[in-house]
Each structure stands twice: as C-alpha cells, then as structure tokens.
Amino acid sequence: NNGGYHLAKDPKDISAYDVLIASIKTLAPVECLSKDEMLCKRCDECTTISLWREYYQVTKQYFSSKSLQDLMLFSKEEM
Image (cartoon, rainbow, N blue to C red; front, top):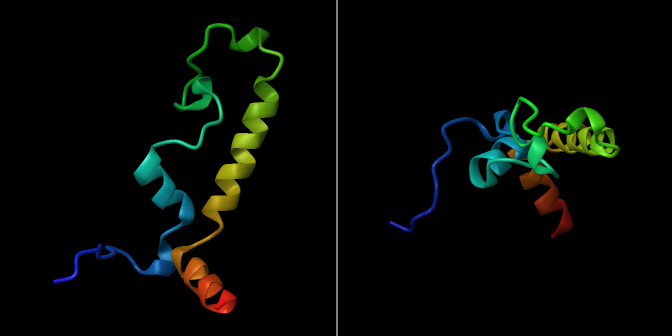
C-alpha cells in the first residue's frame, strides 16, 4: 500500500556495497577501474593507477564490511 522495497535477503546478508553497486553500478574512482579488466591502453605507464587501485580496494572492502543490519543498528544508536 505504501510503496517501498521488499528485501530478497536478510538485512545482515546484504552489504552496503551490494546496494551501491545495484544503484550506481560502480564505485571506481577512475574509468579504467570501472570494469574487471583494465580498459586504458596507457595503464602500464600511468603514474597514479596504483593510488586509485588501492583507494578502490579500500572503498570496496569498507562498504562490503557494512550490512544493512549494521546501518539499521547505527541509525537507532544515533537517535
């Protein structure tokens, strides 16, 4: 009646990363990391790719470690 979403899995089994990827498709900070394979032909020469790759891994790990259940509990603690 009121709209919204029904979860297909338990909130503890859905990561914040899953939600973000479903909604925005990628968290890659640069285009060449947005797919599993490297898209840029100059990747081997790129002076900043290692920085972006590490940042991307840290971001994925962080959001993968937070579940919807964690977010719901965090929300209640703030109130």
